[in-house]
Image (tube, rainbow, N blue to C red; front, side):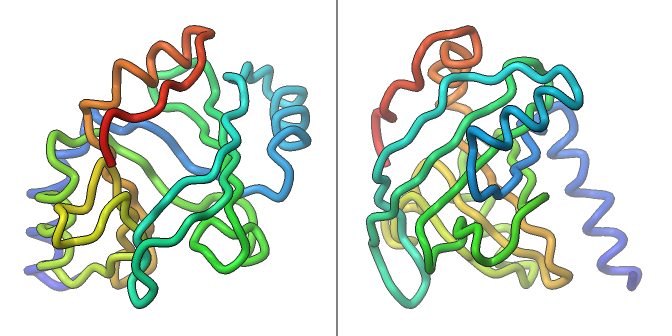
Length: 173
């Protein structure tokens, strides 16, 4: 790690501390993964959310993809099981297992722009870049680490889900 990279790493890692939300696991079958992980480690899960979601992909623009996901109910850092449509970044056909780290940020657009300026690559967003990227993005580091900055404005609806409710639809992209 070069001096500039090490300096940037130390300066920005403090922005994640206390805000890490989840470890995303890409799976073929969320129900089977819930059973397997639940039995192995006593993990309890939220209800599975299964719905089509519109996302923005570089080179493709807005696309609709089927997505199924759930979160472990216990935190502070949760497990997310996620399965997406073929040909998308969440396609389990591209490999299963650890996929990304999600963390709360006040402004996913600003965080994404900061990472892009440091040489990271945009993989997926809730909205087009010209529309501010939306409530989350997926951004890959030059070394391959995939992160998901998630708008802290979503925290209340996720907390309701983790407490046994349903995951309400977002108020905006």
